Image (cartoon, rainbow, N blue to C red):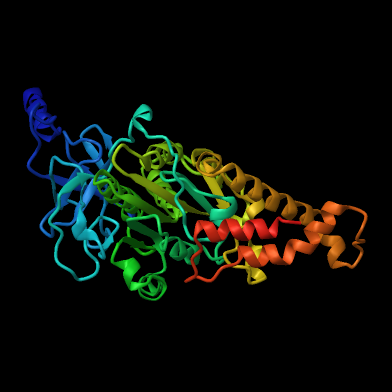
Length: 439
């Protein structure tokens, strides 16, 4: 049986997807393929980052890749229950985040939706991915941002608008240090984001670690380890957007992110599912490309400031692994938590000699810097002779600097340790530094 050529051409035209009209979208598309992390849909005309609604349940997904008329989408929910042919509707907008004073004391998920059973958020609304401020519009960092923690304010003084990394392995006190930082006397608003945490620890951290007065001036963004990769990745963007809104109101904001590593892992999960290639033990190029744009959003503006602390999980205490090395190069300082100090019950377990604040010379007096340098030198000298002291082979009188370091080491260690509810002001701090370095 022969089929006319015209009939075949007409049939082919009917089956071939047509391009979208120049000034509009298809009202609905269809799911073509469903994976564990990404879904493919016939959606000609959509743009990168566009939010789409799955019908009829209303779940959302975001366009993360485009291949002709086929869009790759990362769903905001699990892909369980989705089916090929399911309709999907583009919404012609990007992901928007509710900001403003109504968020104070609230807990929201990684997409900015309430988790605490409180009323729905009414806005105002902002795009989740604002561009960083231009370099010449940034204000100089000239004021210290005191944390009340002696080990930081004495030798690692931070400035208002600085970005600092907290580098540590698991289980050495990152969350406890974050709770102590929330008590900073110099901050107006705290924005905390917990990415990939265990669900059990979230409520413990909120109700047991944070005091009620601290919670009332905090916004908590939480995306636990069981949530979809897009939500875990988006949580840090949502928290940064909320912090930017308070900065624009003239507030001094402290932004805490725990952790940047889990954000990068979620981004890697999406990138690999969409076809990008990563070297074993490292991350796809898109992860390193996105980090500067995200981290540069914090800082000081003409109205207010965002002082940001980002925790970084280092695998096997390797401070030179790719992500840690890249983040350290982008930030204005790094605080290293030592497993050796944590095992000896020295908290906060800050390794002063391995840590650095690049802003400290700009926000401290000459006397403060000299006292801090003297304390650092004594710790360094003690580390050189520590083995001799432990085995009983250290001989006093041969090196005056070593004698002084060994004699003052217990007092310095006591000075650098601190309880979670204990705060120290600058005058007390300088007085104690003078005493420790007097001899």
